[in-house]
Image (cartoon, rainbow, N blue to C red; front, top):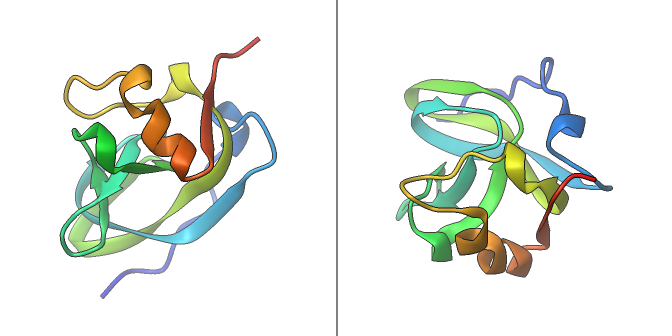
Amino acid sequence: MAQPVNTESYDGNSIVLSEWKVDGNGVLVTGTYTKGAVLGKNRGGNFELTADATKAEAILLADTVVTDATANAPIVMGGEVAEEDLNYGGVLTADDVRDSLRVKNIYLKKRG
């Protein structure tokens, strides 16, 4: 069962560049995640860092360590995000995930 979300210590402004939608119920699987991680869903429907560009669909807003099977975490579900502040799985780049995230209403932008 997922743990309650901890929303006390993230600063969305360091990643998010526009009005945005946050979901505090993004369920992550066991692992250590850094703020800005590009997430995709696994077969169970929970989020994890993805190395498959076609599965990219959310951005993590806080460093999160999941020690149980799953835990809730704040994720961006829409808006503009700073591509240089994101953490990509495997050898992915901003260009690799741009189209998949756009379909989910998440737009990668460069600062400035």
